[in-house]
Image (tube, rainbow, N blue to C red; front, side, top):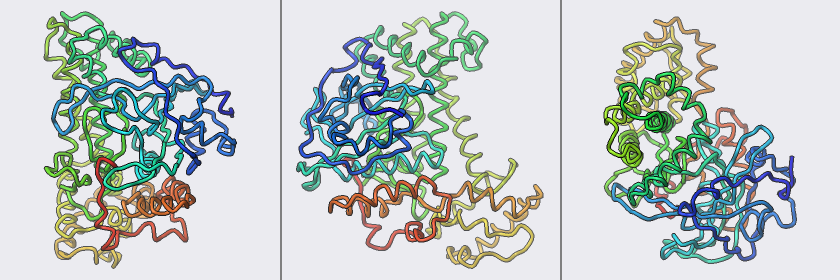
Length: 509
C-alpha cells in the first residue's frame, strides 16, 4: 500500500488534444476537515487506509493541496438534458485529478467533485454541498454491493463555507473513482461541432483503454458488424464499439430496474461510455412499488420516472450513435448501426429476466415466468407493497404447503388475489423440483435487507450537518453487506415513516 506521494499517476486523458479539457487548478476549500474515508475504495488505487490520518489528508482530498503526480483538468462535454440539446456543458465543479494505476494493472480516475469553478461553471459557484456529497458517497457503495456497475467513493471533505441552493448550506468535496469519466455527451460535444478528428481520437482512446479485444472480435466477424462489407475496418470497429456500449447500458439499466433504483437525471451527459452508474443526484430506491415513481421533484413531467428508464436508455444510446456515425463520413451503411442500437433490448431483457428470476428463487427459465412476474408487480402496485421488504420475505413460502408467513400475507390489501398468485408461484417451484432449503439460501443472497432509502440517507446527512460524521461510515459498512442480518441495525431495514415520505430530492441533491 502506498502513501499519497507514492500513487502511480499516468494522466493519459490530459495527453489528448487540448480541446478535450481545460487545465485548471481546484480552488482551495476553506478550513477542510475529513468527514468520511472509504478504505475499500482506497484499496482500488493501492492507497494505504492509514493515510486518512495524514495531517494534510483533508487538504489533499479536497484539492486544496496538490496530490503529487496529479494534473487537474476539467473535461468538455455536451448533452441532451431532459430531451433538450445543450451544446456546451462540461465539468463546472469537477476536476479529473488524474489516473492512478494499481499493482493489478487497473487504471482508476481520481475525480474531485466540488473543487471550484472552471470555464464551464457558467453562473455556478463550483461547489458541492455536504448533503449531496453524503448521498453520492453512500450511493456509490450501496450500488456496488448490489452488483450494479458504479463509480466508487473515496472520501468526503467538509467545510463551513456557505453556498446557496434551495436554502443556505455548507460546502463539501467528494472524490470518486471510475475507470473512465467519458460520457455519451463527450462524443456529442465534438460531433455537433463537426470535429470528426476529435470524435475519432476519443473513440480510439476509449477503445484502446477499455475495449481492448474489440478489434479482434471485429476481425472474426462480430454479429453486430455483419453486413457492413463496404465499410473500412475502422468503421466496423466503431460500430462494434457502439454495439457493446448499447449492450452494457441495457444491462446496467436492467440491474437498476431489478433493484428498484431510479437514477433521476438520465441526461446523456450523465451516461457513462462504460455502462456504469455515473453522477448521483436525485436518485431514489422504491419504497412502495410504484412503476411511475419519480424520484426527482423537479422532474414535473416524469420524463425520468422509474418505468421510463429502459426507453430513455435506448434513446440516449441513439444520440451516441448519431455522434459516432460522423466517423462514417456518409460512406457507411446505416443497417449495422441500427443493428448495434437494437442489441440494447435483448441485453436489457436477458439481464432483467435473470435478476428477477433470482429474486423469485427460480433456478431456471420457463415461458410463463414473464407473466408470473408481471402479475406480481401489478399486485404490489395495487396494494402499495414495499418492494424490498416483500422480496426479502418471499423466501418464507414453502413450495409444498399452503401456509405462508403472516407478515408477508399482511402486506396485501387484495389477499385473495395474492393467494391466487401464490398458488401459481408454488406450482412453478414444484415444476422445477425446487428444494426449499437451497432456494431460501439463494434468495437471501439475491434480496437485500438493507437499502439506501431516502430516509436513511437523510439521517446521515442531518448528523453530518451537526458535525457528527460517524454515521456516514457506519451506514457505508452496513450497505456494503446488504444481504446480512446485522443485529442491532434492523431499524435501517424499515420503511419510511409518514414524515420521511415527504423528503424531496432535486438536481441539487
